[in-house]
Length: 542
Image (cartoon, rainbow, N blue to C red):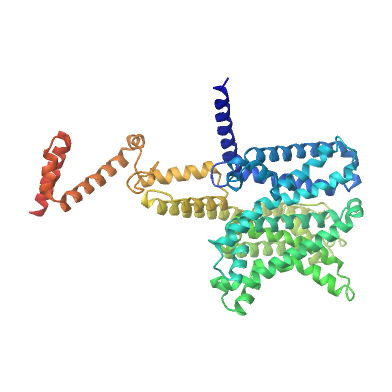
């Protein structure tokens, strides 16, 4: 009985350490800490969305059971999260030094928020409580998001403690060596608010939803404009930290006229124009331009940036193809007017009106609202439709092939960077982070990245480098790898022989001869190899 207690205690310690390392240790790279935190974040956001949708009778009344099941599921997830955090508290450096680690965790601010957001629902099972109040307590789950923000803020301030205020703003809104995780959280916040504001614009057009949530839509729009305006001012204020915009006034003006800054301005301008000039003009039509906020997402998408590079690179070819398309459209409109005007004067009244028919025919859309009825007109339509399949496909073919070529160029550039990093035989932690960031930008999966790394190591003759060797990080090639790659083995042997020759040439020959003459110091094969190297060195000197 006594032997079982230490065994159970040891198993409990190992399990607790394993759970902490797997889900909660931010210092380990290949665990599930980031995925777990992201999952909890998504659950919090979904809970907030559910709280809003409950106020829409059209959606909620017919789906009350689904909402209830989601509440129960969310409560279970957050309960498991709280229980796991309480269980592994002795492993957490923030509480491990306390006399009672779990009690220290229990009274910490984030733990209290976690507990308050779930405890009332359990108490409601034993005491009479207004369920609407309990549902409203789900808003407290928003504070759980600060669990990820707080350490990011602390790390950001630590990295930028000697920097100016303007540089700190610049590092927050732009990727810099000292931006840290807080910059990614800032970007994620902007992306979420873009999605929320665009969804609000879309849902406002649904009368049954707008009737119940009009006030909420107005509040959300004001909050979105405030956030986007703050972001815009932060970017304009801090842009002189960028070498491209160093001038106090002209630098900011140049930044303000860049495409991304213009998009940022258009995302907030309709709100201010409507608010300031509504008594002079009816500017309600400007509300639809709030959808321009979707373009802000281009800043955070590597694929969109690659597309812009492709369009800029292929712009001369695109202009040539556009000219051919316009020429063909005008020719088709003139012929359509010539052949069909007398037969259908109401549909082919003039050449500008015929342009619509020419475009839908060449684009192979053919809505059917305008169709030639004369034999010449129908024959011409057949030819135009066949031509349109090829002519209108040219821009799409140019963009698709150029985009594919651009991605290939960027991957080749990444491979060249890998070769450069592997020149010393090892990839440092900083280089690994750069590789992972570039792979994320190029939308490479982990398996694809591993394959590229393996390919680069094989071509550089370095694989499975042992960075923990006793030679200060000198890579040690795996023997199984060398047995499968005789060319690499031969190159390594040549390098080893060259190094041995250098050692013999710069060393004290008498001491070496004395050392290798003693059978206790070297085997016969080693002594023979030394004699060969010594003879070679003496011949070179003579």
